Length: 151
Image 1 (spheres, rainbow, N blue to C red):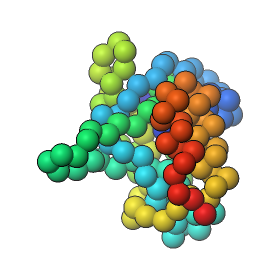
Image 2: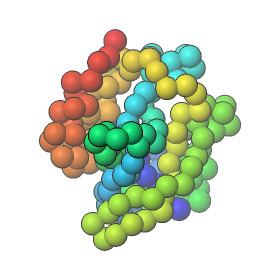
Image 3: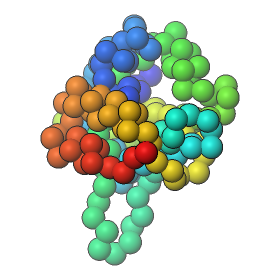
């Protein structure tokens, strides 16, 4: 199973702890999606990262989300499902098209099963920005993460 990581799982060291048998395959972009935060009502220390489709309003600039791609084994998939809270119905697993340097690929990713809104904690936002930097995200992408509003 190809898995697209977009938040703290971007960090290869963090992913190694969650899915130790699943190698990093590369990086890519989710075109037509944007990184946002949701799940504040779920009881974490603020909202957590998720992705949502962007609108197609005239004049709206296209958005994309930077992702790391991992070849996830069946055993690691079960661990990831538990880690992401699928059994608690906090997240939903969806399949999307990812643009890579080698061409398009289909990958699974987890999105928050809740309303968009709220702010992440400064600590969590720092973890997400550090993970993006560790995965090789462009400097302007990391800078935008580091300057987002937070609590």
